[in-house]
Length: 334
Image (cartoon, rainbow, N blue to C red; front, side, top):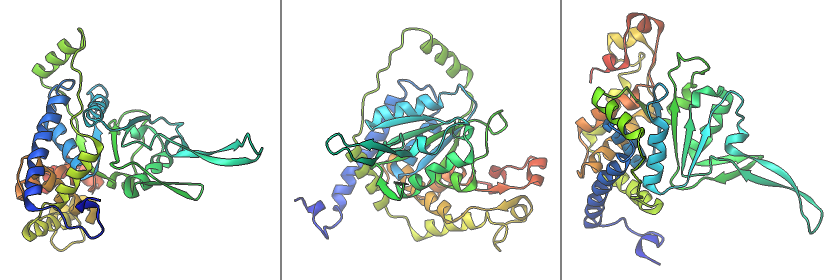
């Protein structure tokens, strides 16, 4: 039995953590290199997606069809050497199609009929919920327990999901035909909401050139599941200064129209602000960004770097904000 596996074992020494920090920074660069084998541009999206993975959070990618959202997630799964399942969300998809179901089977030896659990595609380390908003809220809700508790309950029995476990979802703009709004509880489970925009002209020319000829660019695994879990634990061990925690909490509380610290614009344009989970994700995201840069502690710039991705989908703006073109980014004034 190793020291780290004994009951009551101490956390790794500072030197151990510093060595792991060097490994994490190198892994970040290696992952970006492997992803670039298939994905052109989108550096900010890739960095934030990797930050969510290292922080143990889920991510929602929003953008029109054809921007390689699905390919990005598939490539990330290949580079991490994790089990991967893709679920295409459609209007007729049922909750059991995601979580699994109980099947009645006959025991050939005894002739007895028994129920056995057939796991659904959610039983993978990376689950791609493709076009998640094309399924009705009832089906979307099948992921709530999995995303929060890393378990699935079917027929009164609870089943553990793999570790690590991530839901990486894609979403079409809500204005498109055949889409449903994600319920607030579902959106809140995602650590980040990342908006995938159109590529630049140079990037688009490169995309067209590289995808209309002989396909190359084999993606090689960078991290195993065990290594990734160790790096996630390292991110959580990185200290956050009390002033940074205070700044994050103040920022989140300022998004609530009922809070005394909120601005006049927030009280005017926001119906509901962000909850405590947002404060947690600001700190975790800041820690992950610092670690990816090889730094042993995050700062306010790290919090600001993830603030829009954390808060953007957690603020519910009212009709007046929509009519006047007010955005979350304008309200936060980061």
